[in-house]
Amino acid sequence: MKLQLLFATLGALLRALGRDFSEDFYIHSFPYRAAERAVVSLANFLLGQAKMATLKSRRNRLTGTGMIDALQLFRLLVRACLSLEFEHAVLRRTVPIL
Image (tube, rainbow, N blue to C red; front, side, top):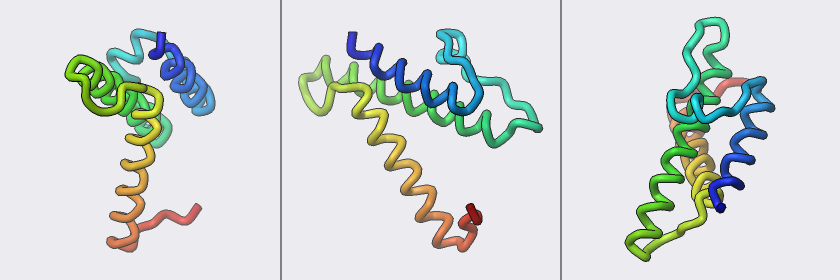
């Protein structure tokens, strides 16, 4: 199944953040805690983009239009969102020092 590649990639990304991937977290996301705000926000962002990629992939498959590879859609969505956030931070002059 093609979603297995998406879930494997998502699991690897979440493990890099110190989080375990499960069906429950995919559906409900991670609970917010003040001490882990940055990590939880990034993990939930990734989960949201994976859900959007799954939705768009399914819709495109049913209509016979657009891209149907959920993993490729996930990568493009994450890249687009991060690029947009970075450009917005540059315009506001709030780019964090890495």
